[in-house]
Image 1 (cartoon, helix red, strand yellow):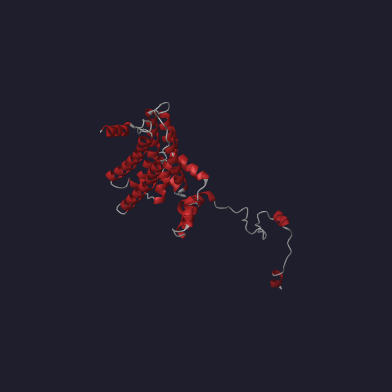
Image 2 (cartoon, rainbow, N blue to C red):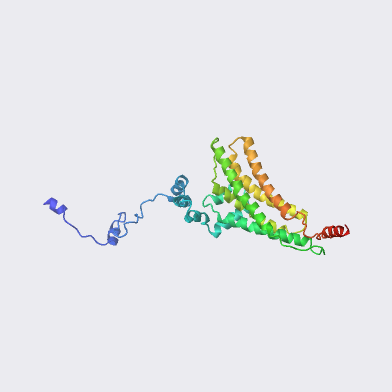
Amino acid sequence: MATADVLQFEEFGDAATSLTANPDATTISIEDSGETPKHQPGTPRGSGREEDDELLGNDDSDKTELLAGQKKSSPFWTFEYYQTFFDVDTYQVFDRIKGSLLPIPGKNFVRLYIRSNPDLYGPFWICATLVFAIAISGNLSNFLIHLGEKTYHYVPEFRKVSIAATIIYAYAWLVPLALWGFLVWRNSKVMNIVSYSFLEIVCVYGYSLFIYIPTAILWIIPQKAVRWILVMIALGISGSVLAMTFWPAVREDNRRIALATVVTIVLLHMLLSVGCLAYFFDAPEMDHLPTVTAIPNQTVAVAKSS
């Protein structure tokens, strides 16, 4: 029968013999089913992958969303909630410090360094190091200025540590809190392109203070001209980081309000740097003056004569 001949099974040779007979034939391997045939044209992955990254976000954005979800999963009264704020490696901290020392015009510090993983580790230790740098340098500066005077008696002023800690940490937390509240209030009235969270603002202020650590050490030099040059350099670097970071957040607002906001940010930063220099380094010290003991003796002498 014809149908029976059609349905008969035939034995084929190996794949090499078949390919030799018909080189244009397409072979499918059962063992390597995951591989596509070599002669089939594949779609280019480069352009499609870039478009997907632009539309859907890359791996870094996925990690950012995952970290954000982890931070929201734990209640705020637990230790795990605050542990995520310190989940940062050394490379990221040094990269952010380098970004605060070398501000790039037209580049947003938050988007370049902070937004992927905002942290409190860097700002906390930068503020702590700055506190001790100002306090120790202030004591050494007082010692070097009055070195060689016979009436001078050096007494370490440990109160400068507590005063410096109060000033630095109050500035690094209260000013960002006030600025965050102001931006939230303005965002409710004006649709802005850029918006920052409170943690991101704290990061910007914390890392912007790093330049004052070497500046405070160099303030030991007992020359006012050198000190004021150093404070102007530090103020220019750190102030430019703050201005270039927060200007995009307020530029869509009223022109006067936007300029007033940026000027206020820079003025508060200037008040901090100039105030620390004036109080801890240029303030007149009274420890080197001789102790006045003549008044009690005179009172005793007057009492005896009477």
